[in-house]
Amino acid sequence: MSDENCVRPDAPTSDHPDRDGHPPCRGRPGCRGHPDCRGQPDPDSLRTFVLLSGFQRDLLFVIAGLAETDPSGSDIKSVLDADYVRDASHGTLYRGLGHLHEEGYLRKHPIDGRTDSYHLTDEAEAGLRSYLQWATNHLARDGAVPICLAGGDQR
Image (cartoon, rainbow, N blue to C red):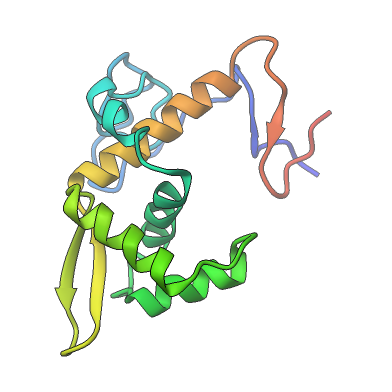
C-alpha cells in the first residue's frame, strides 16, 4: 500500500491548476483560492465556520460531495443514513439545513411545491477550504500523529 493519502509535513503540493484553471500557488501564506494549497487558512472564513456544530459542518461536506447533482433534503439524508454513525432524524436534518441557509452557507432552490435543492454558497466553500487547511496544518506538524486516509499505509 502507498502512503500517498497520509498527511505529512513533507507532502508535496499539487502541480495541477485549480478547478478554475489558475496555476497552483505552491503554498503562499494567506492563499484563499486553491483547494490544494498548503498555505494558511483564511482567518475570516475560519472564524465563523468553526462556530457551526459538527453536524452542520458534516452537512456541508455531504452537500459538497453532491455538488454535481441537485441534492434535495432526501438525497442528503440518504447519504447520511448510508455513511453516518448515528441516524439523523428528519427534524435534525431540516433544522440543520435551515440554520445553514439562514447563516448564508446554503442556497435553497425549489424543485417542486414541497421539495428544495441545496447548494453551497461561496462563503461555505471558503469555510470548508479553510477548515480543511487548518486541520491539515495541525496534522502536518512535526510530532503530530500521522493520520492516513482510506487506502493509505502509515509506516
